[in-house]
Image (cartoon, rainbow, N blue to C red; front, top):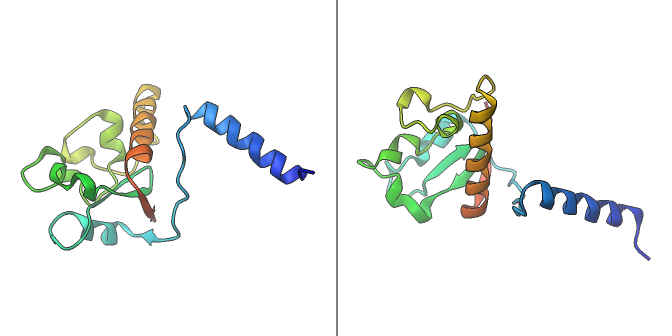
Length: 130
């Protein structure tokens, strides 16, 4: 016989699956990064992986390191939370920021779409402490 808790968990998972378009969420590892620590994963050290953060979740984007190396347009995002820039679809350094609360609904929707993209494509390695 199924327990109440297992039935509840299954129901919640089904609702989340519908709401998120069947995105499979990864459990966020316990590792916490400060902005300074995250900045150490910016491609300047070839022996380190490349990390970026979206909405405070840190992703390992090393599988596409070529997009984040110096000389590429995404280089300014490596080692940073660039949620605001994603929301604004901006490549401007002034928009590279983890703060997005003051953005328009349209920009927040764009950020949410980017968040789903990163969730599907890259492994989560931790979260950012602001």
